[in-house]
Each structure stands twice: as C-alpha cells, then as structure tokens.
Length: 397
Image (cartoon, rainbow, N blue to C red; front, side, top):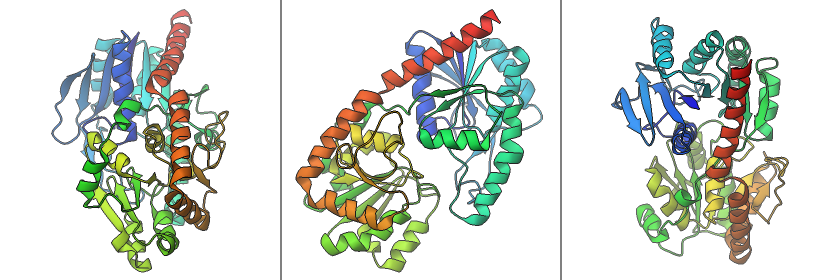
C-alpha cells in the first residue's frame, strides 16, 4: 500500500500523538509499504526529510498562542489560501491508497479529508485528545467548537475512526454523531524496549535524590486533562505516613495549577518539576520510581502503559473497564482509585509506597498485562489490517 500519514504533530515536536504517528509511519514502511508523512512546520525542522523507510513533508505553519482554551499546547496550523492546492500537489504526486490521519481538530486533517473525498481515497482518523477542560467556561467553549467546527468538518468527508479505549468511544459517539463511517477498536501501542532497561541510579542522580527516598514519578505533559492536581492534593495524606516522599513530574508544563496548589498546601518541597526530557531518559526516571501515577482524564494512556511495561507499579484513577473488553483488577495489574476520588488516590499511593512486596507483585502483573495486549507489533498489525481492508474496498468500489 501507499499510506499517507497526516498529523500537525510530528517529531521533533514531542508528545504522545507525535510519537505514535511517527512510530506507526516507520513501522508501516518497515512492513514494506510506501509511506509519506505530511505535517506542519515546527521550529527549525527541515521542510523535506527522510526517515526510516519513508519521507516527511512539513508545510509552512504558524503557531497559535498557548491558552487554556487550546489546552495550553503549542499548536501549529498550516492554514493559508494555498494549503488545498499545495497539499493536493503533494498527495497527487505520492498517489496514496489510504490516508491515516491523527487529531480531529487539526487543519491538515480537514484539508486532507476534503482531498480524500474528491479523490475517492479512504481515510482512517485516530482521535488522540478529547476536547474537554475542568474549567466551566472553557468546557463550554470546547463543546461549542466540537459542535460547530469539528463535527461539521468531519461530516464533510466522514472518516473511519480509531477508538483507543472506552472513554474515547463514548466521547466520539456523543460529540460526533453521524460524522464517521465506522469505529475500529485499536488500543494505544507501546514499545516495551523503549520503556524498559533504565538505570535507576541515573534517574535519581538527575533528580538529586538518594536511593532510599520514596519516589512517585509522573510521566507526561501537564495539560488540563492531566493536571496533576489530584496527585498534589493527595500528598499531605501520603506525607503523614511517608514524610520523605517526592513527586517528580516529567513533561512539559502547559497548565501549572498543580504547582500553585502545592504551594497552597505547603507541599512544594515534595514536588520536583523536571520539565520535558529526551525520550531516551524516561526509562531512567521510571527505573528510579517506586510507583508511577498521573491523571489521564479519567483514563489510561501511553505513559501509563509504558510504565507498566517497564514493571513499575502504577497507581491510577481509572475504571476497570477502561480497555474493554479487557478487564483491569485493582491490586493485581495496578492500584486503582475511583476517578475523582482524591482520598482514595491518596490511600492507594500510600499503600503502594508502604507495601513494597505487594507493589512488586503488581508491577510484575502489570508488565505481563501490557506486554500481552499493547505492544506496537500487535497494534501496528491491527492498523495495517484496517488500512488494507479500507484500501481494498475503495479499489473495488
């Protein structure tokens, strides 16, 4: 197949969507397919670039200001009068059999969708981010954007969509009724090799911590849906039982409410704000952790699964059926707390940090669970099966 991968987010920009789209594009090429990645310009990244088995084209773009409404992301858009013609020239030259899009609210998604409709090319759209915000004003604005901007744009070409978990299925069916053709259940994929093999000593040296300091590592960008506020609010309870505990937040901070909340609660001295780090360093921080925990918008994402794959005990606020039909069991694959229940999260963190034997068992069981169901090999094959079927149906239509 000739597969075009379209995402405004692509390396060197960091983030889950960027990483997954690049990884899938690379693996599509390694499987023998022709691959072209189309993305928005980002900082000093080259306009044209080869990657493992494929090519990248970065279109001129502008960066919108980081605001709470934009989830405080540094989002680049390629919209300009010449975009449809420029994109059509690029894709016509490549002649894609199918287009794999990432991100439902990006201009390149909508532009490539209209191109695909005109050319009769099937599309598969992976929705990575729910447009939600804990602040009432922004929550209402994002619902309006979904209803009046995103859904009409998707209705124009009705892509097939990837559903990564139960929460995303509920979100898609509620926000975008009639704006998609078919939903395909494909979980987020992880590279277990990339997450494992870290040196805990290196991680603790980077944090300036001694080996015996109880450490909660929280991996992932800080945004409104993963704001770390509940973790900070759990710290006073945890500190009463484990006074030396530290919380290391690893990732770009786009939403700093957790930091202000830590100061209000008098626990700032327990919080280490590391900021973004090279992906190669993440295993060192995971190896240094006694537990990993972060809010994932009442769900579980890539960072959680990578921590599990590395054998790190995870404490999470999530539903047991997050990956339905797979079932998670509290204190078997991970420590579960009901979403929104900060005291329960605090109790789970305290237990995981205090009972090292149980935490070790949970870490091993979580590792087995992640490796059995979420490896990139399995997820890539599921994507290729769907893309292949879509291309076959289009060719015989």
